Image 1 (cartoon, rainbow, N blue to C red):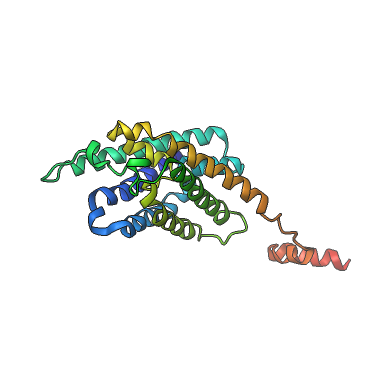
Image 2 (image 1 turned 90 degrees about the horizontal axis):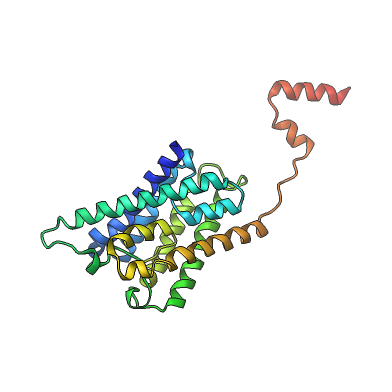
Length: 252
């Protein structure tokens, strides 16, 4: 259960940090500040809970990793449930804090950082434009996750490109959809906003999952095959005692 708890906590931190920055400080920090909040939160969580669960904290990322055959279906279902619970708890806390302001706060009126299209898009972008944006941007995220966590990638650095790509994704996506690329992140606020947010929620579940699946397929196509290790290379990788035995055997 520790890995599921880690996913719940990680998703909670992502939504509280990212959506919370938009709701509670958005007028002061702007799109750039919110984008950095999401990216830096993911980067920190990658190192905080990555060793425990892999730090998916996103059902779309989990789907991409399932398709890449790096996690089983049973674990994936547990991850997604934990991620959604974490996002709902975070949204509830953000709403509670926002309502503590002197002027009060209404989720139904202000939106609680929910994602939307058409009249509920920050830039009033069409359904088709928002759908394509979410597919493409989620593809960016999942492709980066798969590449930076590949066995051939430099060890210990995955959190940096993943966090940075999330900043890029939000810089592009906030004016269009408020940026989801994460069904759990969308579900949390939508449940408290209700109405239009629930009606439009399907897009921010379907489009990220499609983008994740496409990214996983693309990565499987472009990924190079495992490097063939020559005999001398293999011998150099052996412990010293084994190398000595191998050298004696080769001379005999």
